Image (tube, rainbow over all chains, first blue to last red; front, side, top):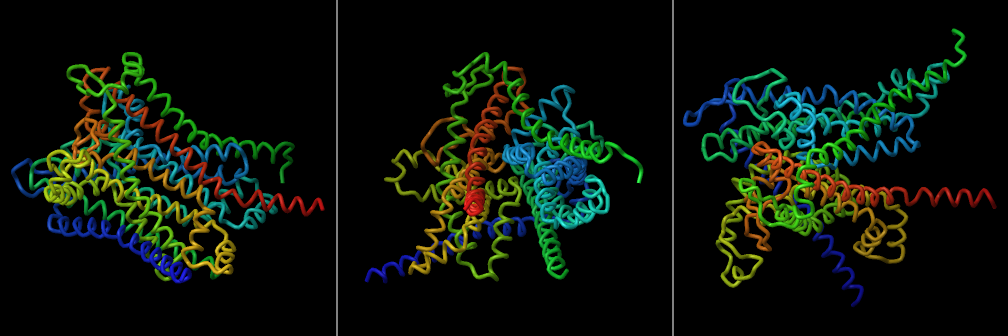
Length: 282
Length: 319
């Protein structure tokens, strides 16, 4: 009798766990369903090539926001990638040191800082002193968010490289720097690139840190010292507007954003699966 | 090879110093955020002091700055989200790490990661046009005796605490579940085998694993809490943005992150701006504390076994 109860309880809990999975996948399915069905009808070629039309006129696109997003994310990557990789090298090379632990802790902390707070911080250091919103400030905010992501992936991937590779280089008389930059880093590079791709995709979807750094711009601008339009901020402005046609555009923008995320995640998955196969093969 | 009396050593110093400088930059950024936010909010801290967090009226035009509704909204929405998301996140973690057949495991991990990767703004858009109308229908259908309870009082607006908590829960689930999964993975297999050997059912074995991993799981849930506290866009779009303190799930309220997103560019005078930055500062400090505690929990989980092994090794060597 008692045993039967224990078995029944076990089955119930297992069923509940399976239900939890289903419950989490429902919103995912709903979000993807709406973004795709609403987005597909409004997404066309002119979305990428035309400028936004004024209220009342249908059609138009978000060419300025697409370009702006690319510029801002590019600026962020430009300084976050080297900083992230080099600090990742430090954390893996001196993994046991107290400083490395502190850096790791700082990275995790920075990763947990709300993105809106990063925006306020960058406003203070890059907008207020110049009395000017700019693409540069937006890029800075996104870059700060990218650094910990890239640092942690670099560190973890470098630690996966077999120690014998580095020891071989050192035995041949290479200095530590040489061994790391010419032997260890290249061995881990494919994985690091995948990590960077994922970080770029995540950062491209950020809105909050751009609201008061890059601001917005209704014109096409490539000047990094000027405010610039971005996809995410544009989707936000359109979503809270009262106009039907702007809502349509917002869904199209959301579809593009989700598309970027899904494609990058899939690419990363394929790449890591291939790397794993190669490792097992060798 | 050339004669280099201090060659190898100076190379080492340059390498360590060079990479270390970049690493130091990360620590510097975290410190700089704290310093800069404090500096920019000095005016408001001096002017209002603690009163800032004990006043309920937020009326910048009249020069009244009371931030208590924002703290309330942030904590209330995050705690509600946690109540909804924790059982689901744990269920997912248990299912993926303990129950799912191998073939199902990878696709499920991928899907939950996708849930985490969808941008906040997309959740917000979906929230505005799909979730909020749905919640409004639900509110309209609420029976009268329920509406008279303080938890469900107020007009059926759709936007409000309930919508915010639901969307936050959806966004937090993948975070807590992936950390909890990692934590469960670190439970030694022998633990489960031991349980089964003693005649445990599946659930009893899982309970053992959960008990073993308890600190890490608390850490995972807290990490999700930290995420919820700072979440901005989706919440801003569905919570109704009304600075009031209410227990009602139907009432439109406001959060710290949302007021920053909405009003920062409108802050005309220095005092207003400083007041907003102070809200940012407190948000930073709260999330910092939550994150540090949860990381400590998760780290202590990972470390648990190694020192013990080292100790037994030392003990053996001594004997």
